[in-house]
Image (cartoon, rainbow over all chains, first blue to last red):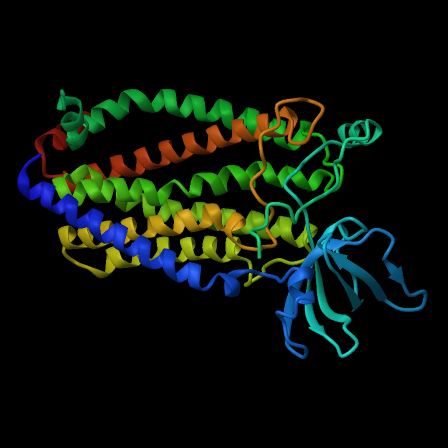
Amino acid sequence: MKPHRQKRLGIILFIAMGLALAVGLTLFALRQNINMFYTPTQVAEGEVTTGVNFRIGGMVKEGSVEEAQDSLQVSFVTTDYVSDVPISYVGILPDLFREGQGIVAEGQIDAAGVFQASKVLAKHDENYMSPEVKAALDAAGASTENHPMSGLPES
Amino acid sequence: MNWTWFHKLGSPKSFYAITTRWLPWLVGAMTIFLVVGVVWALLYIPPDYQQSYTTRILVVHVAVAGTSLAFFPIMAVAGTITLVWRMKLADMVAKNAAPLGAWFSFVTLATGSLWGSVMWGTWWEWTDARLVSMLFQFFLLLSVVALRSAIEDNDKAARACALLSIVGCINVVIIKYSVEWWNVLHQPNSPVGMSNSGANGPEFWLPTLVMIVAVYLFLAVSLILATRNEILQRERKAQWVQDLVASS
């Protein structure tokens, strides 16, 4: 390679690496702001103050969903299998919502420690299966539980 | 090492001649993969146990989204060749890749939004790093197009766009790993399941693979066709182009 070309290539590599480093450090510093939600454990450890809007993400705890008979009020518990946070919501839930399903809720914690949600979104995992395969795996006792929270960075 | 093939491909005239021979094969392969992929995806993929037939959007969404990540690397390689070796053809490829990549990004956002509206219960979430970084790629590709048309001098425009394209590659890494680095609503990448009786088995990933190949072939065909147009336009005063026009 001719020297002037080598020099140009060097400058390009230098710029690219410098920028990548700058962006990387910025993203690392902002990681808690980029995270979409807090986990129930983070909430239990008091990382979020009351009276502030934020999002919480976890699984809907089995057997915790209570729907009101005369209104759209629904209450359930969200869990990351370490800590639990009770959630209260009035509105229509996404079709995918059910016990054992991952959700992300937006709202704030009230004085009683209940998360008053203004929005509930369903989070599904990366495992796709036909109903037959799912039934066969369930029958065999294999764990096919929906774990969209698995693989999260340790907070 | 023998570099003659590289310099040969780099001359607009021989690129035009070579691609004239390649194009029928590429178009043929693309058509076969597209037809097989679309029919398979829309008619034969089994329903997902929890999302039912909605997962059929996956085949199009994943193929287009994955391919859209190739544009900045393509433009960065072409841009580096432009900056270091001043090869004209590289810039012709880069110029036409930008608007094409914007379309790919747009289709990714649109199909993902449709899927999200049904499954997540929302069309768009500003707080999801995967969604926002993909939107950023869309805007970044549009800004490459805008930058090109803002600078009148062809060579200066080429160099400015080349630099922006190299910088844009950083965002590709962010899109790719956003689902692993941060808490997001978007699901992570699916591992490929090898057995018919487990998650993500061949009944899901085989048609997806066919579509990915189809979309990459579509990218190649579109980019080659656009580049050939660019060659004819920029080299219109060259003797071989005049001969070509006269003979057709």
